[in-house]
Amino acid sequence: MCLFKKTPAEPSPITDYLWASREEFIKICQAQGIEPISLDTPLDSWLSIATKTQLDTIAPFLVYPADLYIDQIVDCEDYALKAQTDASFKFHISGVRMALGNMPLGYHGFPLTIDKDKNIWLFEPNSGFEYAGVWFKAGENGYLPKKVFV
Image 1 (cartoon, rainbow, N blue to C red):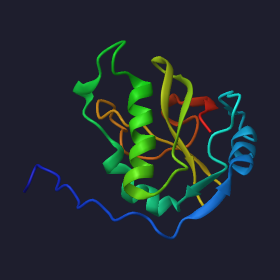
Image 2: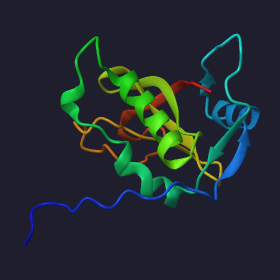
Image 3: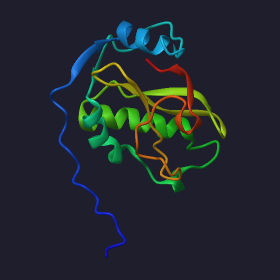
């Protein structure tokens, strides 16, 4: 019996995504009490979103070693932004965005996305958490998003 998990081959970029307008993305989040991070100038007008199955496929590639965490230098927001940019650059999904909110250890940054069915999903990209690499719903694992960078 092998005790090591095989690392799957990195999937190709997703090409059958849907486009969601920034306004629609914000509306879906606001319906769950998640506000956009205030900016004078909006970011992207359109965001590419994927199915939950596609999100599950790219999830292992949005997790980063826990030993990269250095308090006050590389922290949760950096992990979340790296996942956000890797999802866009590597997999063409720009709808994975950094969220800020509460979790059992306090205020935290983590990725948030919506899927093609308009469900909101959260993610922990720091491999030091037992649930890292698995999309979950708001409230699960104690995560309560308040704002999203969109």
